[in-house]
Length: 127
Image (cartoon, rainbow, N blue to C red; front, side, top):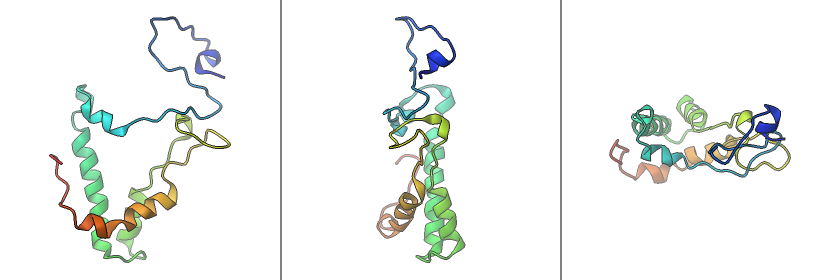
């Protein structure tokens, strides 16, 4: 069932909006880096906010000094877990539209990748 059917919205050829299927995932993937190319003022600080977020997570990993039991490591894991709200229904799920986002396995891999990332230069707003 599509959004337009549920809410009885009539579309014509001038409409440019996406009409999603509501009861299953739509195989549509959004490139999160496109927001940095948008000139709309509401996205003006987006790049710096994203850089600052990942800087904060990396600082927790550095302070943990490789100890997965430390509170800093656990905080980094929480920060690097990106759940997908069920109502998004984007991507591709096998059985239902209930996405999982990065889940625990992916966030653990990102946090565990610290030795390689520690050798890289610090993130800056111009990076």
